[in-house]
Image (tube, rainbow, N blue to C red; front, side, top):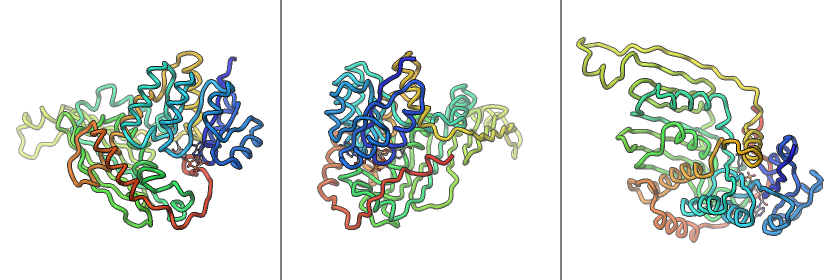
Length: 382
Ligand SMILES: NC(=O)c1ccc[n+]([C@@H]2O[C@H](COP(=O)([O-])OP(=O)(O)OC[C@H]3O[C@@H](n4cnc5c(N)ncnc54)[C@H](O)[C@@H]3O)[C@@H](O)[C@H]2O)c1
């Protein structure tokens, strides 16, 4: 079978796991790696037996690859992706595609202009639980959504934040929990429930010695008047991850690895006015779907889908333009938190760029860095 020749850019942490996935798939061949840190580039090049570069432009122009996987810190994803598109390569970008909506717009525009495949490492979309949830919502069984909830707790130590100079700084990362840990859940939350029209968020730095947020609480309002609540933090050691979508016809609850669907006998909007009994309730059926999966992670599935989209026109699991939704959501929360105001989506590009410039100017280099390059184990163990 013809193989897509892939180069991985940023191979210190997550990128090295992607190199292993690329090597393991029948549709892909790892032909080169790149890291701005020459030592890292050399050691990965030698480990995988491929040519290595320390300048991504050189690698992209080398003719050694048809496509790139970008696994550098987030700020530079757009610059690299746009350069790759302009030079005729397909792109798989790590999440988030960009720190700012204005940069995400430019990436999406470039992929369209140069007619190249663009996808994002939102591997949780490949999990059977979310595939099932998507199927239920798309079937119309939930009905028009009236209320959403997303609670996404994480736990990160100060040592984690001290493990690289770019982490948890405005200049190096462009945000805290929202831009790093939260994009996966926000992607799924907006995929299932849509993007809110207005967000009012509180953001704060609760327990860590960092300049960006480690806790967020937000009220959401959707186009149809539905309300929602969103919470994330890196200060909460116990889950579970929780999402719910209440519609007129049913309610979908995701809690840890369990999906429960409640199907109402009648739509709420009808039964609430027609029911004659004072204490009447609305009957429903409950279906609990426990999903255990033997998939190690969805990373390889996303890479395989990327290659198959290039080779055979397979539909993308994550279309590049869908990467904008989580960035809109994140930017709206940060803008709202910083300015203490209700923010309307789409986020005002100029206002957000101005805010980021201001935050970057006040960004201070980290005092303590004990560099460690270990890929987030929660993404590898399942
Ligand atoms: N999808 C997932 O499950 C998942 C998990 C972890 C990280 N990530 C994402 O992967 C990205 C990288 O995170 P990480 O934890 O691997 O970080 P890391 O710091 O461990 O590795 C990033 C690497 O990129 C290199 N780099 C920086 N600038 C570069 C440039 N201009 N050109 C080439 N290389 C450059 C660094 O030297 C480093 O080796 C982030 O965007 C993060 O959000 C995704």
